[in-house]
Image (cartoon, rainbow, N blue to C red; front, side):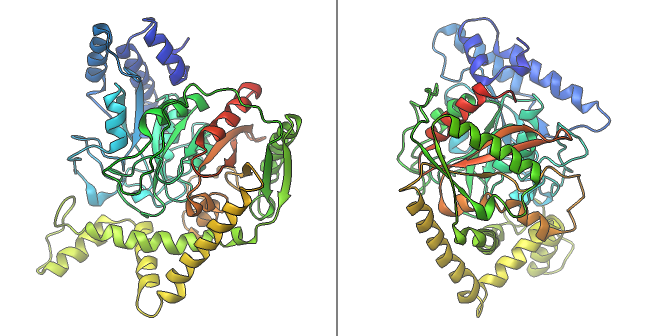
Length: 480
């Protein structure tokens, strides 16, 4: 089998059987990446392919020869540029962190490294994870492997791109309002947003702290399960992490769907959703029905407010979190002014991009005196209402089904000057972040123009395994 086309789980089996070496695996992915770099329009999924990846692979092969390999010994992964890897640069796709090297590694990275995983490189992203297309990056946009003039989705567009283009078997991304699931959908792969707390946020550069999560992207559900089985669980460095054990979820067991109940909220599945996407959702819905599942359309009116409250809460938290980037402690510094205030203003003006500035302004506004109660406090009250309604829904249904995106991947630059239109691409995904529940984007096939279409399936808190098992059934029976 071609190395770069093999799922992570198959590469693991080949390594365990001695059929291949970690060095061969890393070289294969590097060569594929370098071939693409010579293209007229390179994908630009990686910001940096690590020079030390092959050296790490050599050490992994030596460990395997010693007879004491880790669970993930010699297996490679790509990492989004806002997740810290000690000794490597982490810039969040922003000029303000130019040249900054991580002084420590995130908990997720440390857990994967402890079991022998190799980090191939850091992937492109919307600046500070603010965007839905991976166009808001100081390194330029990532390109969709299915159509290079189209967006990858964001903000984890680089991670989705390298997995889809076989430049990595799996990748880490991050989520605040759909930033793993949307690019997974646009690039035709699987993308998991875990329950808030399932994966430690320690070492993830903060955007919106009550919404941020690390997510996993892969070409098959078992690969996501394998990474989650090692990386998930409680972390004393993160007070929001949950005491949950994922160690037994890999390999995914076959699931019986008969008797399950699925809800399709009309608020995010009908009006404004592309006709081809609705058609693919119908195909999946019919497949579920054929497996003995009860599928019902429901109305959950509070979902109509999810984008509105998200774009109050997330910018509010971002304005607070990004105040630390001031040119004093780390990263870019503009010293052309005469006063300390000049340094702050000039550094942040030159260091931050337009979308980041826009969200900081919004956040400062909704938190300001006289507007806090009217906007932020009210948004938090509606969020609690949303979480309650979602919780009630899971007393009757096992899963929530919807499109991942209401639209197909669009051309690069098509919507960059229309931020409101871009914000609405998150209309199907933000509720899962606001409600802290897990959700998975599942590839359904291609449109008539050959562009990927994804479906979102959400479950109750800490039911990641159930989502992945449903996806595995679909993966085994579909032709995509």
